[in-house]
Length: 299
Figure 1 (tube, rainbow, N blue to C red):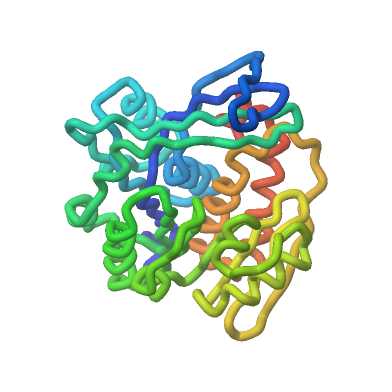
Figure 2 (cartoon, rainbow, N blue to C red):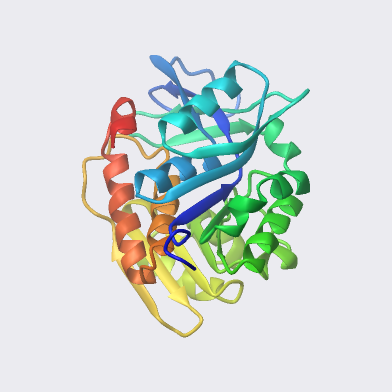
């Protein structure tokens, strides 16, 4: 690719308006827990990763859809603030914006429920409209929060132009052979690795490394993040490495995976090797989880 296009990262994926709730613990089935604070946040894995890639120095573009509502307008404004090219984020008539509710416990961990809304309207027309951006894409980021058929079409379009496809297979779901065949780099967390590789519970860095070795049966490069344990990577040549997590004071784990993926894509778009790119992404994720939510916009 020419120097003018080498740093283009395009995200084809989800945008959600998040409601963040702080509570002493997450509720069990049938339980009501009294929280002590809440605040809104613009997210969705796609939106988060697009902002992260821009923050890491890439030319970041987003292809997605929002509703014609207050949530949608807030999501568009957030992409603008993050320096993301959002010309191809469509306002979907008759569909509400995607949203989620995330509940954080006292330890900084969370659970969330998403409502996909307008994200489910993505399809071939969105890819056609963004053909110029597709042609300039060095790395395409995909997730599992939009229709798989649309992700496959986006991946085919980028691969036809010589770009690479990075799939963050989250949330966990069965992947079709058509999608797997298009993926160059697979990134999953411990839960997703367990689901896709059929391994035992991934709780250690060694466990993440074992899962990564199994997942290269699916994709040429597999990366497994294991939270506070670290990250492991393996490719089909047998090259494998693992990096321990950087020791930081944990404030919130929310968004850590998306920060990792966005920073990884930005590094790969610059031509960094895989070990160097994973090292950069590991550091970016550590910085995010040690930064209060209110201060993350300025990172």
